Image (cartoon, rainbow, N blue to C red; front, side, top):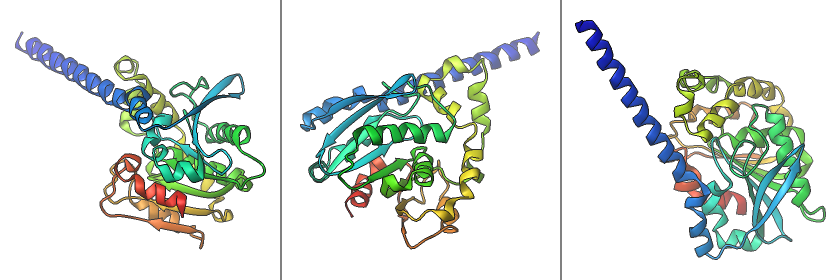
Length: 283
């Protein structure tokens, strides 16, 4: 009898903990939703032009601001994420004067209807579709900026479409295959019992992580072949992407890669240190 009571108590504690964690995750995800930021951006008098770019049978939601006759900058968010993750970059007056800033919801997120994918080639082709739809053939190629999971998408673009890119900026990017194989929490999040408790964007994020290590390992064979001007931003306080990623990339170093490695930088650079990204785009 006592054993049953203990089991029931433990089960109750587990259920309450699971519900509490679920509520916390839902609130956290809501804080990143564009609805929580759009009023601030409109108050800052940022003028947006929206596009729905066709991709296969679906559409990619794209939001642009800045000077459409200048160098285009494609901003690629992480996992999970939205176009609005680049709020501090989009709000910079200098960038809006001198660049065309293009942000979008990656497949599986926000107002984009393209399903989530674990295939980096699909991600890169989606980004390419936006570049071809909004780019001006009479201007210089794109600057592409990727944060977190957006980093592998940028890498895939560089390897497959180098002629489209003038410069890349990799920010806290998931690039070392040794660090990004599926973890215990990926398996837990995919378990049917826990799935309903996890917010949709985190479920989407979990799906695209499953084969990332294999995709990155395939790309590793080609890293020595590209020679695009690249700025690599990584912080020692990043708890999501190991700082050793910088050392991994230095194995394939060329004179065209510049490393910015502040000690106090965490994973959330677009929010905590946007000036590093702004400077990387400008210079």
